[in-house]
Amino acid sequence: MAKTSPIPVPTVHEVPDNPWHNAQLQFDNAAHLLNLEPGLAAVLREVKREFTVRFPVKMDDGSLRVFEGYRVQHNVTRGPAKGGIRFHPNVSLDEVKALSMWMTWKCALVNIPFGGAKGGVIVDPANLSHHELERLTRRFASEISILIGPESDIPAPDVNTNGEVMAWIMDTVSMEKGYSIPAVVTGKPLDIGGSEGRPSATGRGVTIVALAACRKLGMDPKSTRVAVQGFGNVGSVSAQLMHEAGFTICGLSDVYGAIFNPEGLDMDEVMAFQREHRTITGFPKATALSNEELLEADVDILVPAALENQITGANAGRIRARLVIEGANGPTTPEADAILESKGVTVVPDILANAGGVTVSYFEWVQDLQSLFWEEGEINKRLEKIMERAFTQMVLQSEEHHCSWRLGAYLVAVKRVADATAVRGIYP
Image (tube, helix red, strand yellow):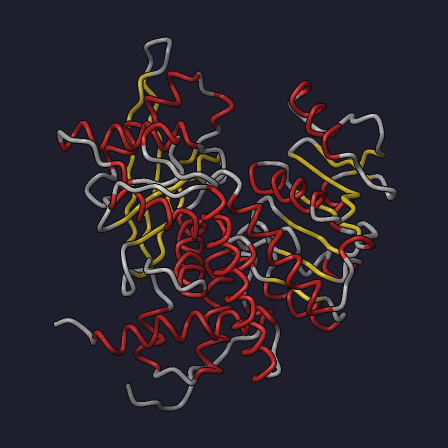
C-alpha cells in the first residue's frame, strides 16, 4: 500500500491507565515510525470482533447466577485467532481487547501463523466449588463455541484457568460436534492431546530472554539479583528456572504479599512451603514486604509476572532494577515506560518475554492436527531457537531506529501484520 503522512502520536499524558488505551498507544508509536498508511493503521488499531455473553449457571444450592464473559478477536490476517481465557473479578471488555491486540503482536513477533484473541469471565473462581467452576466453564464454552475452533480461534489457559479448564472446554465443544476436537484448545492435559513442555513454556521463555538480555547488556547471571512479582504458573516457573540458570532470586510475591532476602531464597524450600501453606507469605527465611515494595526492591532484574498496570507513572521513578522482564501482559504503562527509559532501565516487553506459552501452544496445535507428538527436549530446543531469533530481531530494530526494545519489538510485529494485510488486500 502507498505510504502517506504518518498518523499523529498522542502523548502519554493523554492516555489513562486503561489497558486498551495503552495497547493502542503502543501500536500508534510503531505505526508512526513505520509510516503506515492511515487507513491500514486505522484497521490494525481496532479489534475485528468483540463478543459479549451473559449466561446462567446453576449453583450447588440450586440457585441461578448470571455471569458475564467476553471473547475478542483482534486480528486473523496471519492465521487463526489465538489467546487465553481468564477467570477474574476484574475482567473487563477493555482489558480483553488489549490482551487480544497484544496477542496479535506476540504471535507476529515470534513469527507463528496465528492472529490475536482473548477471553474472560467476570468471576472469582475461589468463591466457586469445583462443580460450579466446571458448569460455568462448560456453559461459557458453549456460548463462545460459534467462534472457537481449530481453524478459527484457539483458546488456552490464562489467569485462574489451567489444563483442567481447557479439558472441559475441549470436551464441551467435542460433545456438541459429536466427535473429539483436541486442537480446539491448547494447554490441555497430556492424556487428551496436550504437549510436553507446555505448562512450563511461558516461564521457560522468560528465562531464555533473561539470559539473552544479560548477554547483550554484559550482566553475569551468577551475580545478578532478581525479584519476581506473581507466583502463579508464570512467576513460579520463571523463578525456578532462573534460579537453576544461576540467578539469585531475592524476592517473590503472590496475592497475599511478598518475601525478600538479599542473600537469595532457596527455591526448593520456598516451593515446599508454598505447597504446604498455599502461599509464600510467612516463609521464615525472608522479610515480609508488600507487593508494591517488592517492585521497588534493590535488585538487578525485576520480573512483573502478575497483572496489568503494575509499573505506572506513580512508581516507575522508584524502580531500582536495571532490567525489567515482563512476564505478565501489560504490566508497564506507557507513562512508566517513558520514565524507565529516561532512567536507563531496559525493558524486555511482554510481547516477547512471555511469548513462550503461545509458541509451545502453536507446537501443541500442530501436534494435535497431525496426531504426531514430539519429545520435551525437542520442544524446548525449538522454543529456545524461536525466542532467541525474535530477541535478535527486536534488538536489531531497536538499534537501527535508536529506540527502546519495546518499540523495536513492535516494529517487527506490526510490520509483519501490516505486510500480510497489504498482500491479502481488503475484502471485497
